[in-house]
Image 1 (spheres, helix red, strand yellow):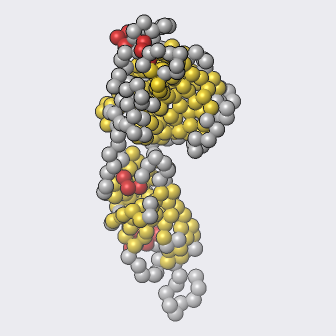
Image 2: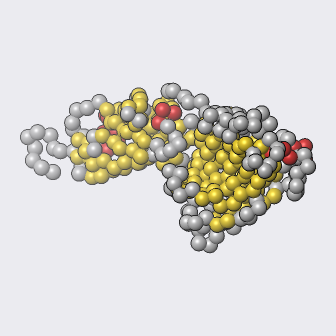
Image 3: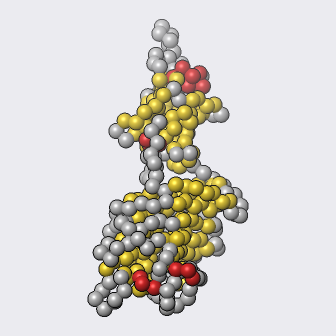
Length: 334
């Protein structure tokens, strides 16, 4: 099965201390290192969840490096949390300085909220630094605390390590809140599934990315349909066919067909084969085996589950079919 290469190499997994939550795996921090340019977007972590309203969660980019930027480049790095139909995020932008600033670049930090199609963009909090005062990598962090009404208090922060500061006005070597301070999301969010996405523009090198105190949903929810929708146990046929669709940013091209199976009432059946057609993963299962599972049923609905892995992340989805078992020819109705 074709595998896609991400622009970020996930290099280290550190297990953090948070108890298990039903339907979730243990919280952890993940980090990755890499670089990209020219508008690269990479999904870093998927199926994030923030289950404890009393916790403060954070997302961060450590070691953003702009030392190779030239004065005429508009560059940027952005970390966005995609949840429901909204983006929350933090970014750093550089661009040629306004006329009244004599240093090579002006560095602008922003935190933002917008719709998932980028409409309604709002810069919620910002902080500007004379680029000439930052001679090396720096860090960004987005802290989040849930309010009782399910909105979120967002605190954007930056940090310039001592070795990167050159006459920087303000604190050095510690996390510092943006000039405009914390802000509150405009709409409530029940964060049960979210994706952390990195966007990099020309001239930037992405550093280490991570999060803390976050749980991850154990399973990606797939949309599954199964054919035939009405299964005649006495009819001839070789296959049960399932069609699988995955939510963004997962790609059905990355499904490992060797992990795919059909589940029913404690029974499991490995896929015989599968491929991708028109953006949908199609997979075949032995019909005779499924008929044996359902023998004795007539005019009943049953749920069948398709499960597998996409990029080593488990997924599953369930579909309902109708089972009929008409009497043999020559016999009356049941």
